[in-house]
Length: 254
Length: 222
Image 1 (tube, each protein chain N blue to C red):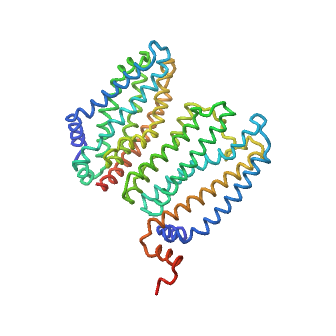
Image 2 (image 1 turned 120 degrees about the vertical axis):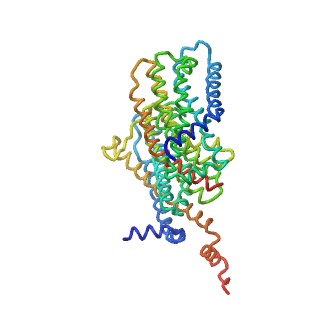
Image 3 (image 1 turned 30 degrees about the vertical axis):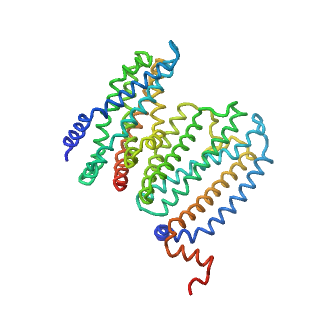
């Protein structure tokens, strides 16, 4: 079974470090291409909205950022589950890498939301359902970040943050429902998996490209952070030393 | 240890440490007073905010009470013995949280008529307020216990506890305040009450297990 084999291999941070290099390059190139195409297409060629004019174009940053920030949290919850059940070191590395990226992306979603809200709703900030659930997501991220800062032991830090990430993941749907019930100004989602989009294709195609681009960028960024984290943690081991030594002083082995 | 023994033990510990129950209640009434004094006199809209303020104060009171949930037993080593020796540690945790709820959630529910009076909520809203508190406060105790278990190892865990659990309390606040508001208007609020009960059920299924795991992590930190 190749899945079982892969699973066992994932237990080794060293193996991940060695195979991740081409993946990072692949995701990086894909992100660069997709984001360039998406930005130019969305900002220059996509037609104006008949009501919002050009201001709707911030959607091309806002929507992908909000979507991916939730996915990253979900990924963190899954990594937490893996860490808790199988005690896989790499999962803790993944949580550590997801946190700062997720915080930045959520903050970006809130910021672009404010910029979009000013011309559209006439206010920078409105206590609207989806805004609040994004803000709660930011607080959930910050809580885990603060918890990790407070615990010194590496293993316990990982398990504690994994536990909180899992509990948070279970609660996210309830939080989303509750704030949707509470109040909503947001337009309903224009693109869903089941229905036909309510936007013309010239508008949603660039959005799709941007979403894919941000996903690739997330993969690139998180994997890069994971590599740095692995080097940091394993800095005492022989393979990391050899890696560094052969890079700088090849004649060390005499 | 059987159920009765566990309950008796937890109940006695709570009764002998009355400050742990009474101080949060004193805090609650103090907060209500400060709000009432701070808001304008004879403000007609006070009832509109009453539900939200009541729930907000309940959340904070519960957090104060949760901070002390495991601390004493953690410091003197009893907790470690209980987790190690119990056949099912989560039962110990569940009983501890249940007794904590008796001293916070249920007590607040019984005091709800007073709170309604002080916050200017109409008498017609009292039954719904009490039901909402009865359905919603178990979730606060159960989810809050997870945060309390993880932060018990820190000497100053209070602020971190708030940061970790307050976002999870948001749905309870939303449905709780909404239930009271619809009751003030005179509509039925059974939908919100069902939601609160549902959230408490979800918290009951994940809370004790997560709390047990959190305690195990904290015990290793010692």
